[in-house]
Length: 212
Image 1 (cartoon, helix red, strand yellow):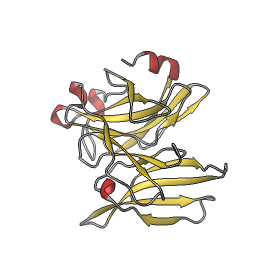
Image 2: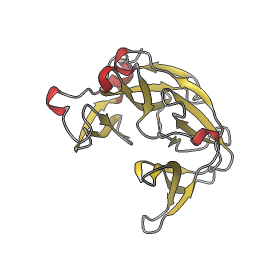
Image 3: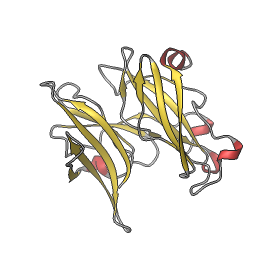
Image 4: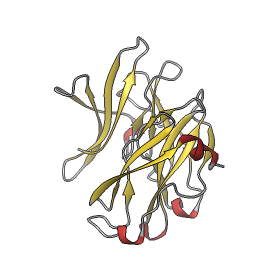
């Protein structure tokens, strides 16, 4: 199980379930699966199906949008896509909503966990891959009513590795699978070079003000 993106999902009736998308790797093949639990003592694991599940990086929105489940994905290995489902397990190909734009993400962009709902919209923490496979973390804001609309994004990385942080099991990589907001402060755990994990925090107001 790789890259679990766990979210507290609230259904239309107000009941909450913890759902997590992840990559299942057999040693030879990969597929996307979802974990479901209410108590973290027992879990159900189910494979996802459909043309929207062909690659890693799927992250579920924390509630339905217009009566349907919504997911971010990266089935083309390069861009962030918005996908929808009626039953949580079958996913269509979706629409491309965020593409690489700046030099630090020019090779590939992906999400770093489930979107976070703010009054201003859906906050998405991203990872960008630049030249020589250098990873940085960024952020963007999607429209709250229609998350296929990109409202704003960071032009500079939110986090970039220090020179001393490049070496490790997977060099030059920063990655995260989820974050949370507490009292208008973003709390962001992230890994460096697949070797150790640390935390960052930033004011939501400052983060949004830095977007363009």
